[in-house]
Amino acid sequence: MSRLSLLLLALCLVVAADDGVFGQIKSYLWTESVAGCPFGIPFTNRCPETGLFSFYTCCKDAGAECCFRLQGWVVFIIVSLLVSLVISCVGSIISCICCCGRRN
Picture 1 (tube, rainbow, N blue to C red):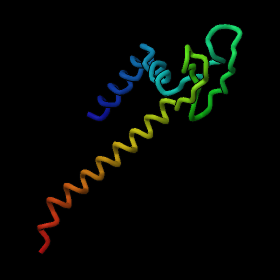
Picture 2: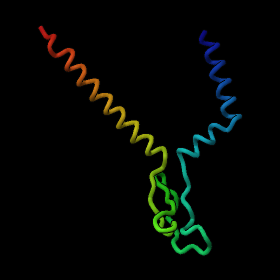
Picture 3: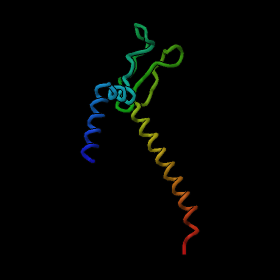
Picture 4: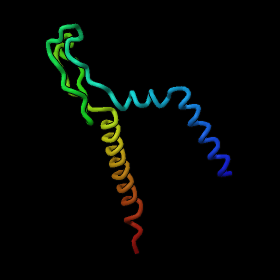
């Protein structure tokens, strides 16, 4: 049974790679900064380079200013940690409510 599971997993990975799924996932998790704002040439404002944790986009009035944004993977990690914290707190409260009265 485990050999069949490994074979199916390998097949799924090959199909996903062929369809370009990994490229789509990468585009959600990593974004490059724009060169400058507004989008026309010549740029009136140069935007900073893409960092490990952040990138810059054009925003404000007609896209005239560079605005700081977090990379998608950073947002994903923060949301995952917050969801884990909430689930842990809710589980602890439920455990306390259900089990605290049962002590001998």
